[in-house]
Image 1 (cartoon, helix red, strand yellow):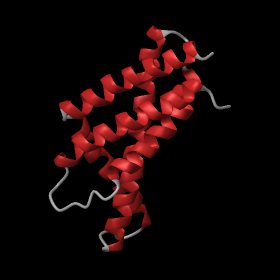
Image 2 (spheres, rainbow, N blue to C red; image 1 turned 45 degrees about the horizontal axis):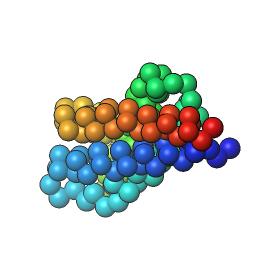
Image 3 (tube, helix red, strand yellow; image 1 turned 90 degrees about the vertical axis):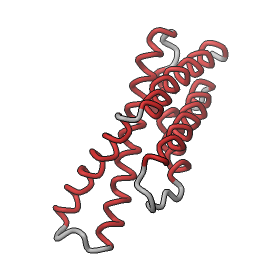
Image 4 (spheres, rainbow, N blue to C red; image 1 turned 180 degrees about the vertical axis):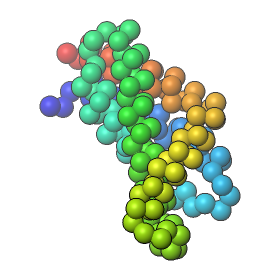
Amino acid sequence: MPTAARLFAALAYAVVAFAASERFKPLLPEGLDTGYLSEINAAIGLLSGWFVMGRLAGDGYLRAVTHGVRTTAVLAFYVLLAHSVREMFRLSMRMRYDGPLEAVVGVFEVAMDYGRMIVTAPEVMGILLLGGVLAAWVAEFAARRWN
């Protein structure tokens, strides 16, 4: 059921994902086509905010902090999964894998590489964690205001 908390959470997490993606782009290897990286991540952020944080809003501002970190973790997981699968398909079209099992393992290897890059970038982690908590507070405010 659509609520104001879901709408505000979706929009706020889309902004967080877009901002983190823009700060992440310079960390990627040169020559890698980023294409619609920020837009795809914003869409994943929108869905994470709607389905995860929007459902959890209304428990109070202190619990919103933990809900915000949880939503950010869900967002990061699906972003890593989506882009790792995309990269696996790109590499498999260049015949870099010997079989399907190696390609599936390649998804996790790429996800670990991207995850390591995210965790070791303080700007990206700051945007994700602080932005995630602020987005959760925005959703909490909307849940209290329009409930």
